[in-house]
Length: 234
Image (cartoon, rainbow, N blue to C red; front, side, top):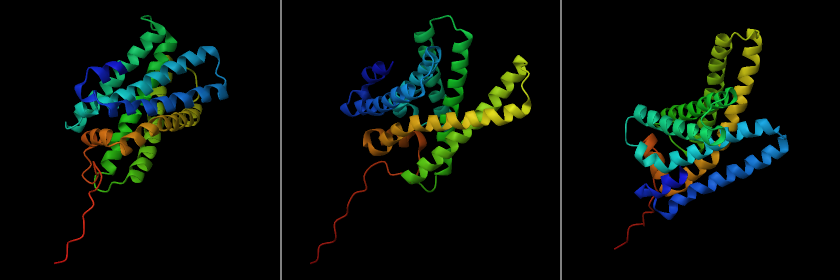
């Protein structure tokens, strides 16, 4: 799917489009180190691999298709981005688990949906907060705040509903204590994954224009500020 996004989209037949592979390689390297350090059981490794690769490849495809998503209403852009991430997530689930979706696969897809929604909502809220006053540092700080907050709230709401529907006899105090901590941890994980892609979006003029097209921050420069020469004395 990543290859198709590069080859079939005319605007991506550009050497600069291959820069999206840099953050993808960075997060994959860090993920390999993290897995070895934590020592996940083999069953959990497959589950988290499906989650991680679906998320990271989905973000890369979003970056490659951002010029198609941008210059629309923010709601339409949000829905299109959500659709792309959903398609990538389903493709990842099928590639790992086949067409038979087990309970474990459904759980991973549910967690992926929470993280994707939190990420996109984090961008929306950060864009709104920085609509008048923008700087790269300000944007990244607010993105961290809203991403972690959205993941925390999303995890709390979704798993509270799941516990109620499935009739798990878990004390509400346990849900209110453990789930927010887990949600915040996943929010930090999500921000760490997004960070290398954001550095690319802020540093590369090729992707910065696409980023601007999606968020349309009036105070955000889409290119280098031209240097004006002093007036000539006559």
